[in-house]
Image: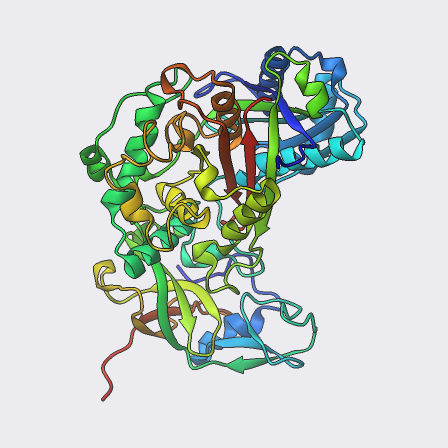
Length: 137
Length: 382
């Protein structure tokens, strides 16, 4: 099943969803006050400015908290159970809701360092998810 | 010096609770309103304010007051509907009190009805807005609270067993409440054996889903004095809202709840030590831990040890909590029954579960994606 965001990609959200197709986690940065925001919005919740530019973040951060879904509430997640939904605090500041994947839920911890990955893809969107950072080489 | 009281709760009423197939948001609200009017001895035609909360099954939530007003045959001076989840009961009582104090209405009925159990509720929806959290499998209400519970555990060493004591306490109290839906006693071991829903929350950490309705009648202290039970004075009122979610790193800890209760204490000129009994909004067990910290009954991170063993929060403990069983065991009326129980405790009507000498009750509510909160501090009839 190819990935389709719900609700669908719009002009406003396209850079966020399409960034992953080229491996980039893009967020809006306010052109007036510099605040980097998530969720995607037409205006800055800091200064209400409507001027923003898309910035490529490091895609790195840490697990603020997480929960393990032991059952699915939606058919698109049925084959993923058990899966981890996490609050990820990016190094640039914003907090995302996302998943920690690639390890069993028991290997996820609060404070764990993670990096973005985009395994679920459709034609015009890729889902940012996170996986534990590997040791520095 | 006693705090000046501008409004009182003169009547409380609840419909039957539990599984009530065939009932609607309107029929359950009407059943509750009849009970509340009987409770205080006022008549339907005395009502000149109608404030409502649309349930999870209401077909047109913003116009719920209109549908319910027509159904009840009420043409009031003041009307409206509000959707703030579990904070709504407290907020509507506050709006009613403000209207009474301002002279806009004399007798305000705050009413709720919802066949959430059998009527197709929408509790399993995804959060988020332009970018839905459903994209990451974030569905239902348990997960929001699970995120808070997990971080509390990581920072402070809080355990699932400690959460379990909140569930045991609720059930223990519900066993003494003939109107409670779940009265079969549970043990900590039962809690630990119950299946995981969204780790770290187990089945017995979760509230019920119930059909039912609740109504509260708010009027002036003078008018309440002439009603059957004399009226429970509203001593303090507060709200707090963290309407941002991901933009606030401390959202998981619900910082607005502390502000909300602090505002109510300030208005009532009371402090945590003055509170005799507490009805704390408990959609999940972890919620009670947060409230204990935010209401100043213990310090940040200390709520796990506070509830451990279940003694402090028991009916004969230093702070009896959720004396009717709460959302976890009495019935899930989204906090409305917490107000009802607060009123009944202060009137001394609670029989086997009565807290001896209760003169003050703290009632809290919180809702949506954990964003809203409300607090009432109620006093004994004067």
